[in-house]
Length: 152
Image (tube, rainbow, N blue to C red):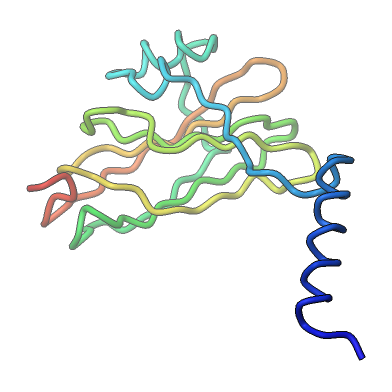
């Protein structure tokens, strides 16, 4: 009968062998653009991402509450029916850093995201879609915040 000590010893040697072959999972490292996340307005953000200025479109939709009681956790979402969308972004106009979230999508993924963002005050929130051919389209929604999430 195998003891626990022997089992752990064998498991450690198997794990070492797998690690040596590069077969163990590694920590995910997100790639992000520091200039994009530090942008204070839409023009600077699009310049940092190398995109054109966005135009408003009915093909991009944004979801979120009309009034958020707590600005620390405001549920928002973005979706589009456009074919060939490569990136979806959520922007909060009056936050210190406008870019709240950026998602790269492929053709195998439905371009429909939802997350929670922090809002310091009532502001316009934008859902921006970037297509493979370089078009940048957006939808906007005003969300009122009763209790600011950035210490207010």
